[in-house]
Picture (cartoon, rainbow, N blue to C red):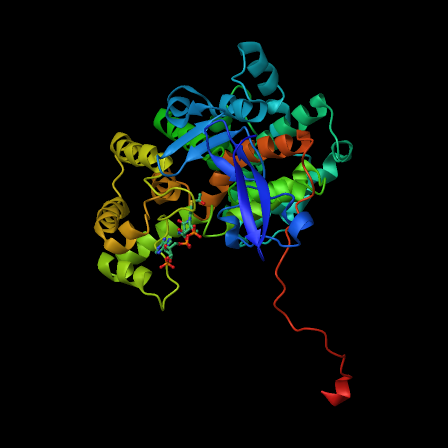
Length: 429
Ligand code: ACO
């Protein structure tokens, strides 16, 4: 018999199996706990709770390791494209040349929006946050593909939906930007790569075609890859939870976009730059902001620091920081915010409060500065995160649907409200 764990409740002993992952991480399988003991477990924010077994991404927060399907993120960033990485995440293996061509071929068709979708954009307020628009549009896509909404998709139907979502998030994201700017949408361009098309649809206008710059294309390639998956994070867990009710992939992805929007998750990249701007506007008084973040009576946090799983430097932040400085040099961009960021990081890494709590820069700390350097407005940063995270969401939805052990996600609770009491008519209250 393998390793087991014992729980003693009121003198009675209960034994539960321990399961082990391929990287030797261990879990006590308490699936039978309530049925055998009538107790449940309580785990605020699911900090210790494994919601599923997964073979997509491995990360070790103590050792700063991140691997997609076993391949270190550093190697993927060095050699792969975003579409190849997407295939790897979704299907589990690096594609052959012909597999990749087959996967990518329909993208050109799928970049194009259904003409009726333009009406959806037209009815949305120009000042609305692009993440609200992106989430709505992702869900609206379901209206155009009724044949893809059934609970089980064939392999071909799934592939079509996945390619459709990857292509459409690119176009729709660019359109949210155009909407914000009050500019006409720009058609995708034949022969352009995924990232070139994104930049073209974002920045070309009727009057002037955007010229893609190699450094910018390479920077976005790496950023999208670095954001492509991060196992059971808040937005991915949302996608899985919604999908667990057999909701279609479009609806599930829309929930992922909404979860990502929050400033504690994918919205942090926007908040980092706003925080650096605030520090700059206050005359660069970094210590004042650090003191606020440490004050127990203040809810203020230093954006871009800390992570639920990384208790070491986020390996994605290591790559982005190096890139950030190089991209600034190559593009000849200077930004006083970079200097503030470097100083803030140096101070935080020496400060006992942050050291004791193992709060290091996360992926969002430097990514916003790169987006800013390449001309993307702050409010669009979470949208770029969503483009990057799309393959991860799709891969997790697929894995969940194919797992015969999957059940509808339905946590329990410990009730802390009133015990039974009688209804009081309104005139007697
Ligand atoms: N600034 C100041 N203090 C912090 C910060 C921060 N950025 N992050 C955590 N802490 C403190 C908490 O106040 C807490 O202190 P305490 O133990 O004295 O109460 C301790 O560190 C642990 O923090 P928790 O909130 O319990 O950690 P949790 O794992 O729940 O949260 C999170 C992780 C949300 C990322 C948090 O560190 C945070 O809010 N960071 C800022 C927002 C951010 O950068 N989010 C992006 C994360 S990366 C991503 O989602 C892509």
